[in-house]
Image 1: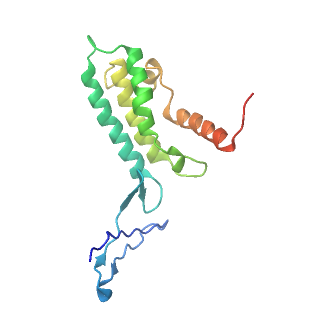
Image 2: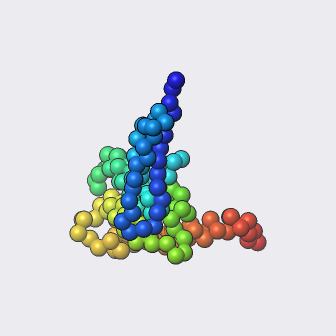
Image 3: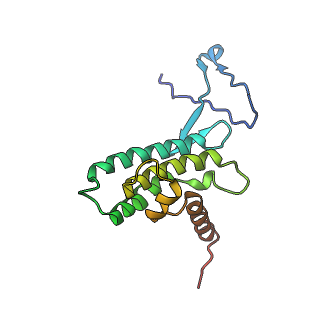
Length: 170
């Protein structure tokens, strides 16, 4: 008889909650230990549903994509500034903001999530402009013609809200 894979996950908002295992050995099963992170349909859930790991995972994925894009050229040869901007906006930003609607809404603590995305956008702006890493973030984002990530999230959230409400703008 083949057993299916059983997963256990506890959601809680408590500060230091216990994370007990379930012992099913009395009914012919095994001991099931809860996971700290749960992946489902490309979403990463943690116990407190603050989506810190989700944002960290996709920001890291964007950084590895960005590293691969660096092989396309250097400051003397390769892609133009406008081409790098286009690559960032079309290839990297959609990955970084994958289903941001899960964690970006009024009343949620988003400082850690925004910090991860700011780090990712800073590295992208450095790549786009070819600036030194000691350059100020806001300056290189302006030169790279990138809006701050928090404003980009507000813009996308407004569009998402309009689409979800099926509002037609004439």
